[in-house]
Image 1 (cartoon, rainbow, N blue to C red):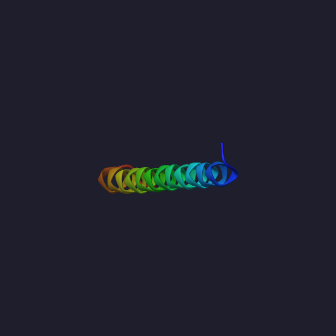
Image 2 (image 1 turned 135 degrees about the horizontal axis):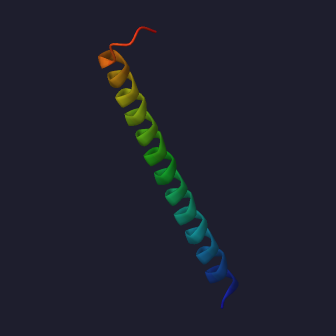
Image 3 (image 1 turned 180 degrees about the vertical axis):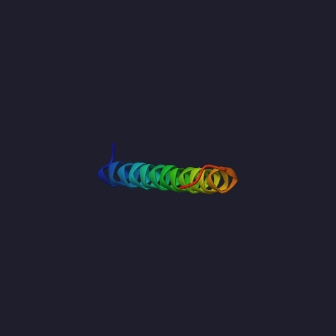
Length: 50
């Protein structure tokens, strides 16, 4: 393989890995936010004193 092609392939691979990591982080943050809202909602309905 030509050296330029190898560098381009490495750049594409790195960009794809960064994109996947970003998507996974955003999905995790969304899940965390959803859980927090659900927990707060459950606590507001909970009749037990705190």
